[in-house]
Each structure stands twice: as structure tokens, then as C-alpha cells.
Amino acid sequence: MSTDRRSFIYLLCGTACSGLLAADAQQRTMPVVGFLNFASPDGYRRMTAAFLLGLRESGYVEGENVAIEYRWAEARGDRLHAMAADLVHRQVAVIAATSTPAALAAKAATSSIPIVFEMSMDPVLLGLVSNLSRPGGNITGVEAGGLVGYGSGIIESYRLAGVYTGRILKGEKPGELPVQQGTKFEMS
Image 1 (tube, rainbow, N blue to C red):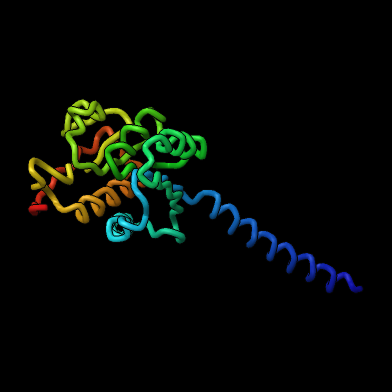
Image 2 (cartoon, rainbow, N blue to C red):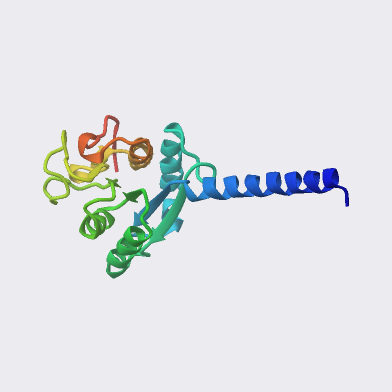
């Protein structure tokens, strides 16, 4: 085999290998969002789609530049703490805790990984944040329900949780993002 031909083959192999290594490195650096919910995915398709829309509005598309690890407790609260601990162990970039029990489990599992909650209860009363305008710490989120079932729409709340998750992926600190409160209300 001639020297020129051998050099060409080495160059070709080197180029192909470097492309594979670059693709592998890109996949490894893709941020991972942990999505934690008390219920099952069956009843939450529209809400999950709204969350993904919010992420997309922030520049993140599942499978393209962000990965999502879904954890559904299937209405078994005893599973939430282990699921939250698993997401912490996997070192996800953000935990989206999309129910009150999930938010409480996520807060108990970590004080360093950012948490975005979506819930219908008062996060100050529950001890998740110290106040709504400057929550402090590693947690912020979105007030879906309200007194007697009058509150902001849950679909909109999930979208806003997705937007906040995207903002945190871009480097904003959850403790500096005010807890979102609904601007559109509906009777449920």
C-alpha cells in the first residue's frame, strides 16, 4: 500500500472517529430534567405537553437539546421519596416537581439541585419557600388552584413550569425567580 493511500485512510478514519466522539460528547453534555409527579402519565398528557411547550418556548426541545427522566408515582406517595432520591443520584440539572407531594419529596431530597414546582397549595404555608417574591434557596415554581377550586388553569401552570425550567437550564437561579401566580382564572 502506498504512503499516500495509507495517509488518506488514516485521515478518513480519524475524521470519522472525531465526528463520533464529538457526537458522543454532545449527548453527554445535554442537560437532563427530572420530571416527578404523584399520579400516572395517563391523566397528565395535556399537562405534560404544556410543560414541554414551556420548555420549547425557552429554547429546549426534548431529545434535541434536553433529556427528560420521567418519574410517575402512580398515586403511591410512598414511592416519591425514592424517586426524588434517584433523580438526585443521577445528578439531573433541574427537578420539575409537578404536584404538591412531588415538590415536598424533591425538597427533602436535595438542597442544591434546582427545583421548579407546579402545585395548587400555598408554597409558603407548606414551607417550600420563604416568600413568593424572593423564594431563596434552590426552589421556585407556579399557585395552580385556589380557594373553592377557583384558580389559574392547570395547563397554563404546567407551561409556566416548563418556562421556568428552561430559564434555570440557561443559568438563572431559582431563588431569584419569583413564584409565579396565575393571571388567568377559571372555575373548576
